[in-house]
Image 1 (tube, rainbow, N blue to C red):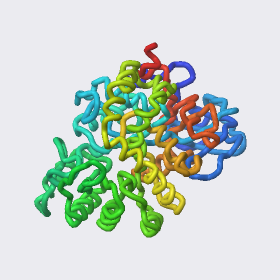
Image 2: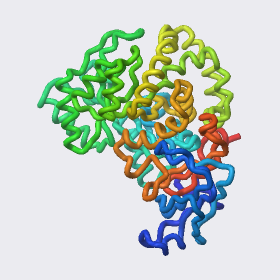
Image 3: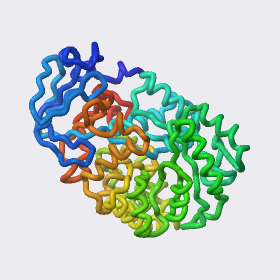
Length: 449
């Protein structure tokens, strides 16, 4: 389905900038968000009565004073809050390796999940492991303007040792150097936005031991990708492996430390190196949440984006399966440990980025709720879900905050997310690249009733 078909004709059309960045462009195109409370994503305090001018796909001006732009479409921001487009830096999109069962890039599962992210205000996602043809095909369609979706960034398959975590079909398997180079070159030829390695031998919780990627080989592989201009992230789960990955030069960590409390030294290391760490609390907490509080599925964000059959199945079959698993109990015990680890790192000045390890905007919002419940202030949680996420990608010059010159990915809210982070789900408008998304035309259950 084309963008033309998914953007409403009334009040949602943004004309392309006619010429250059000068004043004439302001007269010919744009959006003007008037008198709004701005939370810009940088961590700075909210600014009341702000004015934001969007010209083409960029934020052209941000001011505490009235902006005069007669040709722009005016959006009344009174009584509303403006934040940057939210970003989830760890998803596994349905329809590829996940639920949905098809690698067809036109299949409904992946498209509906992408529309669910947009509906929930997530304008960028990073797929941290999937069938390469599936996810890169969707990425190509999104970038060509053939598909309404968040900005898609992806690794494709994972890189690990044979038998290592995630080392199934479609992974790039390495055993020695320089014998690994041809396989790495094939991975690079797919033009991944980042590359995800795995460095976890398991043997914790209810997981059996598995082979571990040698640290020296990990360092060579990571450096090879960096020398080709590609950032790296790594699956880890405990402090020692995270320390070794940082020492090996891996750029980011794809998960928090969940196997135990972090040391003071590790907190200081994370603050000093500014190594981005993705939060992924929701994936573990979700087991016991479903078992103990299935009523969360009745919240609007879930009913709007998941069909009734799926919700019913989760409340019955899935809930029963989770209740019988020892993994559910282990994750319930360890999730608060991970929350406190993230809080400490964030408070010390480390870089936490939002990621759900799932495939739905509703679950991505749960990530914000869990971080705030764990002691991270709401203002910082918004930065974690916006600018810090862009830092994780290495795209902070273009994305992640409402600042002049950046891409105009914006979410207008009806309620104050600083008073209650769940208010980030009360969305009045989603803007991606200067275009207002018609949420009523997305392929979602809310629009099929």
